[in-house]
Length: 124
Length: 124
Length: 124
Length: 124
Image 1: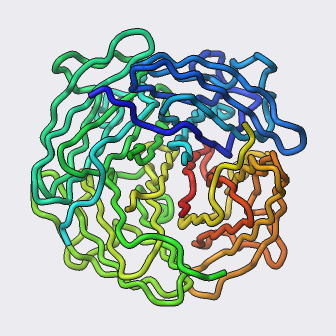
Image 2: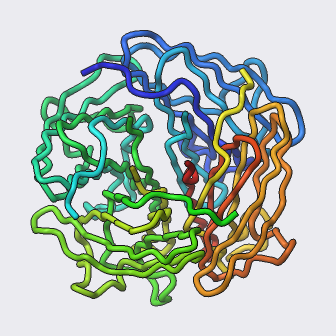
């Protein structure tokens, strides 16, 4: 039942963290999440690289995703080696040493009523 | 026309049931749904496993999806072997003994005006 | 440049047409759309079958998608052989005699401010 | 780490630019975006073709996506060879000479509170 499902390389072109939020509730602030699932029996060593329109990529941001666990990484909280700037178009490459599954979501609360979107990331 | 379409293993990394709702309408309460389609001529025996960030997986939750039918399973209503906690990051693995298709959706009504998202789940 | 892209069989598990709308604007009424693209040089003969939870499937609904054209089919407007009931869980199978691409979207305007979702359908 | 990920042909059936917006904020006006990521070491020469329901396709719209960069192209701003009309159903074919990844998003602000959707485009 716990055999690994997934791929080792994932891409998400539409990264964007809105600069503002209509609320102070931390859960409802504008943010993006990369949710990762590791159904296998080995911990996943994950590296996240951030691409921009007008500068070289940032990263890698290193994350450990334990065996048989999920992690939902908020991209606005990454800060090593550098924070991702808000109100800036970016894209995301995720590389793992074991198969994982990746989903990308955004909560946009620039206006009073929040909007959401999600998609399974692209893999090959 | 009714030949089976789909796969036997599906994954959804971004599971989350908001703890609150701005309405008492049961249809509009914050919830997540796993919608499944079985176009084949054999009933599907489906097992759902829930992964967490800091504990071992829960499940399997067993669902029968009859031949030539769809089922839209509300994840907030599963309770055997245990309910899925609200306001908790989780992920979903779905395994079937015949090919099915799976789509994941969330209705978030924490604020007065609801937000929706959906994606076809990942399969291989 | 215009070679055909796509597949011949597509599935969408999460079909649902909300019964109500907070507006009388026809464009903003709660509805679902199946958007189809035919980049090839031959017209596509498309058949849509609707699956339910507790009865046999309805259809086929027949649609012609001309060569090098798109059609965005509103599911609430299909009526031959029968309309799709509102407030009812259903799923969609789309079969074409030439490769096409299919995307599924919902506009939910039960509340004053509408919500949207979309996903590329599942194909194989 | 920077090896190319992606495909050379992508399709998006559900294109639609709402004609109106409840705000004058340029970022919040109703619009669609095609976000593209090129993780490889060669610039991508991208051609976008727009399909309609009742006329021949428009384009190609030519975009250069530099190596190791992302571009988020707003479809309402394309104007060579012609602008995409608002309130009109269309579909999108994207062709590149090197592998890229494509994601499609819409912000709909016809009503006071905006709605969002996204999906990874279809590729083969």
